[in-house]
Structures are given as structure tokens and as C-alpha cells.
Amino acid sequence: MDSRDTDWDGVRLHVVTGKGGTGKTTVAAALALALASGGRKVLLVEVEGRQGIAQIFDLPPLPYEERRIAVAPDGGDVYALSVDPEEAMLEYMEMFYGMRRAGRALTKMGIVDFATTVAPGFRDVLVTGKTTEAVRRRDKRGKRVYDAVVLDAPPTGRIARFLNVTQEVAGLAKMGPIKNHSELVNGVVKSPETAVHFVTVLEEMPVQETLDGIGELREAGLPAGGIFINMVRESQLPQSVLDMAVKGRFDPAELALGLKTAGLADGSDASAMAEALAEEITEHARRAELEDSERESLAEAPLPRYELPLLADGVDLAGLYELAETIRTQGAA
Image 1 (cartoon, rainbow, N blue to C red):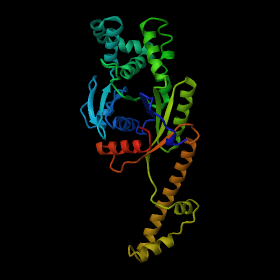
Image 2 (cartoon, helix red, strand yellow):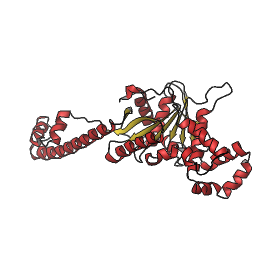
Image 3 (tube, one colour):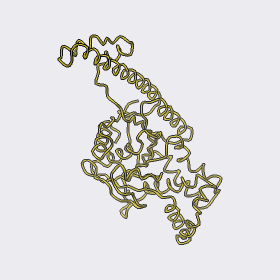
Image 4 (cartoon, one colour):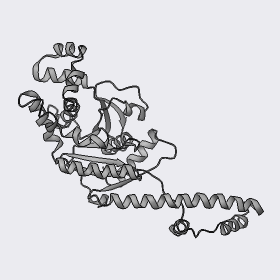
């Protein structure tokens, strides 16, 4: 399945996950910019407390409030929120019990840490609850406040457990506000309004984690979205040259002759330079072969795939806008 099979028109919550080191937060930020393009309003949420969004957009640490951080291509605004479990707990106490003051006292006593140690899923309910509330929120005219919400979620290894909040709090509450709240969250997460996207690179471990994560989502009844293959390096060499290098048929002598003919080197210098270049070409060809193999593995998953380039100058604001444009061009936003 390729990107032309994509239809995100009904999706309001885009959950982005991936193995550490694959650029998950970068892709989430670029996706938010792409979705906001054309005058839309998008909220980008992080829940791991790393302030990754602030770093990527070159901003001071984000407070626990929604604030505009970027203007998208062709207009549109990206807002950001760094969810703090303690602040989410205070909102929860106020919303369901009218006990915000009491909640502050409880946080000073470490009740949040205590509660989430006894029932780890409760912390996930708090942070996903804040995210899904933003998805559902409407203004006085009944219009959705945000056209889309992008959640920079925990890594692939625990994404199914993180999102499957109803099951996680089942042992904590059989009835009452906590159970009702978790069911409300679950109603959004498992609905057609949600899509869980995976970020990977063309290496064996991240690809396998992606495939395992897709399987876990399917078992949990959670909606998978697309696969973003990040940091893709385009080959500057013809496929015929790569094939020859992999098969050991690449002749450094011919390369040395070419260097001499072009006036780039002569004599022994040309031979030494040709040997070094041949070694680099062979290594590049072998890597390209491995990457093609990982692409084939990802093609087994029935999800749309998108390829994002490796940014030569690293990830900065200009790079984010470049990635956002690539995401739009490929039809992922």
C-alpha cells in the first residue's frame, strides 16, 4: 500500500510513536506543521516531559498551557502543550470532584507518584485524557477548537499499553469518575477519528519494532495509521553501479582511469584514490541493499508508507518546514 491510499480527512487525533533514535518528535512536529497548512489550527502535544518540542522549535521550556509556537505554510497555526501529570491531576480533581485545593495538597504529599506506582495506567489516563479533551473541545459556536491534534507519544514498545487506557485502569476502578473518564478517553482513541503512526528508519531493529507494534495495535483493537520512514539517504549512483559493487564486480582500475581522464589525479595517486572510492562505493551499495530489504519487510504491513529525507544540515526550523512540505507532497496531510 502506498501513500495514494491515504485518507486522513476524518482523523482528528494523530498519535506518533517510534523507537528511540528514529526522530519521532521531529516527525510529529513536521506532521503538525503539515496538517496546519492552509489556515488550520493544530495542537502538538508531548507527554514524556523531555521538552522535545521546545528544543526542535528553539523555544524556552513549554509551560503546562496551550500556546502558539509556529505559523504553518500557507497560513495556519501550530499550538503546543507539554502535559504535566501533576497539573493534569489537579484538573482532574477539579473537573470530577471540585477539589483543586485539596489536589494541590495531595501533590505536595506525592500522591500522584503514589497513585501511579500503585496503578501505572492511571498516569497514562491523565495525559491521554488531556489530549483527547483537546480533540473533543468545541467553542461557543459548537465548532471544534482544533482541526487536528498531534500527540508525540511514548516509544513503540509501550504504545499499545499507553493507549489502551480502559484495560489499564480496570483493576483500579470498577465504577465512578475514573472509570467513566477512561471510557471517554477510550471512545476517542479507538474511534475512526484517531490514527497511530509509526516512525522508523531503514534498520533491522526499528523496522522489527514497528512491525511488532502494528501487530500489538491490531490485537488491542487500536487504529493504525501510516509508517513514516525517516532519515532516508538517496543514492547518487546508478543502480547498475550499486549492483556491480555488491557482487564484487566493481573494478578500481576503471575508476582510476576515469580519474586520470578527468584530470583529477594521475599515477599512483589515481590508484590510491580509486581504491578508497571503490571501498566507499561498495560499503554504500551494501547499505542500500540492506535498506531495500527493510523496505520489503515494511511493505508487508497493510499501511501507507512515506519517506522523509535525511536533513544534511540537521533538524532546525528550516528543516522542519522542508519535512512538512514533503509530508504534504506525499499526501500524508
